[in-house]
Amino acid sequence: MLALSAVVNGILYGGVLALLVLGLNLMFGVVQIIHFFYGQLLMVGLYLIYVFTIWCHIPLILSCLLTVGVLLLINTLVHVLVVKRLLTADLINQFLALASVMLILENLCQAIFGTDIKGIPINLPVMNIGELYFTTSNLIAFVGSLVFAALFYIFLNKTYIGLAIRAVAQDKEVAGFMGINIYNIYIVTMALGGGLVGIVAAFFTPIYSVYPHFGGSFTLISFIIVVLGGMGNLLGGFIAAFIIGVITILVSTFSNTEIGLIVSYLIFLFVILIRPQGILGAKVSR
Amino acid sequence: MKGSMNYSTGIFLLFLLLAIVFPFLSPSPYLIHILIYIFIWSSITTAWAYMGRFGLVSLCHGAFIGIPAYAAGLLFNYYHLNPWIGMLIGLLGVAILAWVFGYACFRFGVIGHYFAITTLVITELVVVVIMAFREVTGGRLGFTLERISARPLYEQLLCLQFESKVYFYYLAILLLLFTLYVWKKIDQSKAQKALKAIGDDEVAASCMGIPIVKYKTGITIVSAVVAGIGGVLYAQYTMYVNPISMIGVGPSLEIIFNAILGGMFTLLGPMIGTVLITLLQEFVRIYFGVTYMGWSIVGYAVVIILIIIFLPEGFYGTLRERFHNAKREKVSIRIPDQ
Image 1: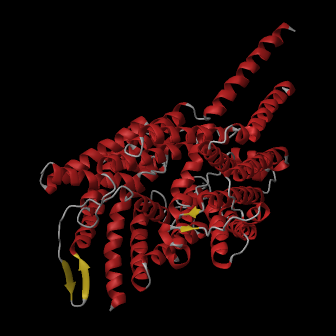
Image 2 (image 1 turned 120 degrees about the vertical axis):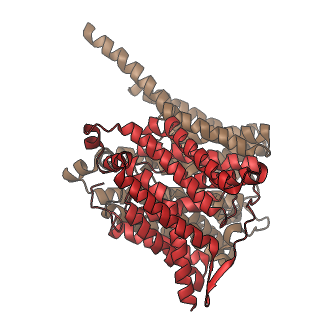
Image 3 (image 1 turned 60 degrees about the vertical axis):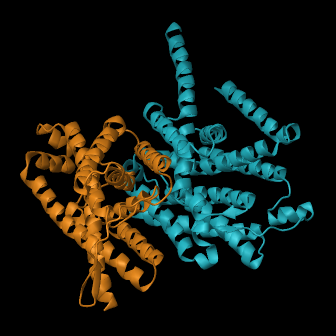
């Protein structure tokens, strides 16, 4: 029974993770940078929702929408100010610039909000089916993740911009020949990525409380999932999120959280050596 | 060219002499402390740049400095094992880790973004392992080294714990010189040319018959071990080890920041970067205090971004480049005359 409950909770957690990595995967695939402040952007989103609802007394739904907009702007701004200038730079320079953005976001939040844990008191009940217990907030996030993944899939396959994004992800040069303005697509992608982080923040609000070093672990777990699924492969990332979710929760239930993390890191190392293109990634020369 | 080499060597020797006589001139413990810090982290940064300058962006130097520090400290605390032997064991462990991980990565062609992320995961793996065995390692809180009471100097040296900072100061200088010497040795060897070729174009290099995996693994091991010595010395100096401040992503990133700021392609670049960043941090800490801690790091990160965008070769690297270009222009002007 414990195992079954762990698996169910793992699947729900996997859904949360799947939503989390959607934006990162997109940015990896299209702009091909290591978006090192991904988790920190999420943290900023959670702080923003906190500020809007608790300090400005805006209704929760509205403040979530506002947050999506603000994160979209922040990510676009970072792209225009930093990433755009470093697209052809050395890998390490791109990487360090984005790590600096991470430092900026983390320390700004620390300077403004202090190191205390902040959260909005939303108490959603724990649900149960028979002896299976799971939290409603995780269930909502799970459903939300499925819905947004579906919407996102439709967007990428049915609209002009979506198809252009996919074209750029597949082959920049040829996409350029086909009359797609790559640099505009980069901006659209980064804006979309920021917006997706905002949506994740909205779903995370009932689950997590936020503190300045909240982002780091999420950045890492997102990287792991994205690489596992194959960089830029959305379906692969989706599947990898569920694998990591179930394994982490399963191991954590029978042992402790650290062992769960160790196992997921080891799986990552194993996969990157044996199958570096990820579970569903296409074989490409790197 | 020969003349300028001797000139810069002369300046370097002058600075070295100054550093050696410094404790006699100014016995201020604060300045000595800052200098020890600078020397140890300069050598760690230089060790990082051994591989960094060939395009191998390692984010696991936190782990490489942390593991020997933990090994030496824990073996001393639990079994009263001599820290020198503990250091050797730790360095052996790091060498094996670097070898296994380096070989696996390079054998299977993990490069670029993938390599950076893999090293990041290795670092976090080490941190989480330390947290998981918190009964032994002290978990997130770290542990304090057992202090030995006053003893004769040779026993202090044997236990790597000194009554006076001055001895650490000289050890740190020795370590830094050793690190720079290793850099020189790598530069003079065939490995430097091979690694440069690999860094420029891996496929072409392998077509020329360069054993890529061997050279890359080799440089990873050298870099890890030399950085590890610095880690042990730092832990013995501060007498305290903590997984967040010693191993995690933070210190790994800080090492890279130092190297980038100074310029990692030149011998003295990483050192100059460390000096600049340490002085900046100390300045901010003294004049703005702890209240503006967050803001000061924000400012520092903005400066880093500006430097990366506008001076991609780093401070010292860019200056040197300008200097050399100016010289080359002079030469090229002279040639048409002849």
